[in-house]
Length: 213
Image (cartoon, rainbow, N blue to C red; front, side):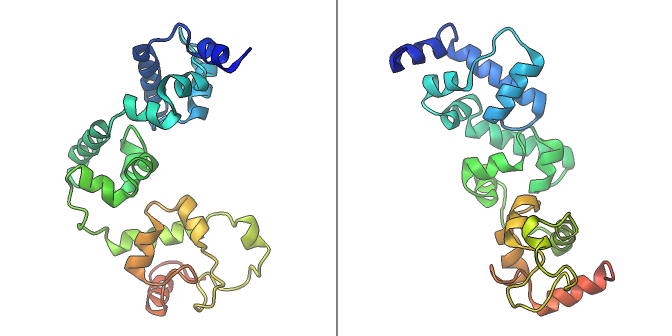
């Protein structure tokens, strides 16, 4: 079967309305902006009337990203931010979306480029700061998660926050994967760089305010 025949086979029988409606059903089921894996899982678990292949969306819309943008436009993501804000009676933070929102925090970073840009698009004031204690609590939460493979290969007896010498237990990569906020926010607010997330004063404050190691 040639490329043209393959594309016709993927898209045959599905209207754009049916495809977007199906994506909305996937969103309702998993409460996050659907991934290709979510679509395949939904098709297997729910066996709805139509089970379009991911390639169907790519062939019809040009890309998976365009299919999502068509189904869930920017204005809808912004309205969802305001719905969550009204529910919480305050401006939402990124971690609020994973518990209260329909799309999840990562969807806003992917769509708008950053959390701050998403707030601006929704006409929130991005200058309203996340409290320092929120950031510090989350640093400790991430640091106390199971060690990554690279961390277990190093000396496990060293302090959780050592001097700024490039030997931090809490790596930027781990924070990017598990942190509730952008790692740029931690660095900008608490100091440091890729070689070290926080400075000496913040280290002392962290050790004194939380767990005694």
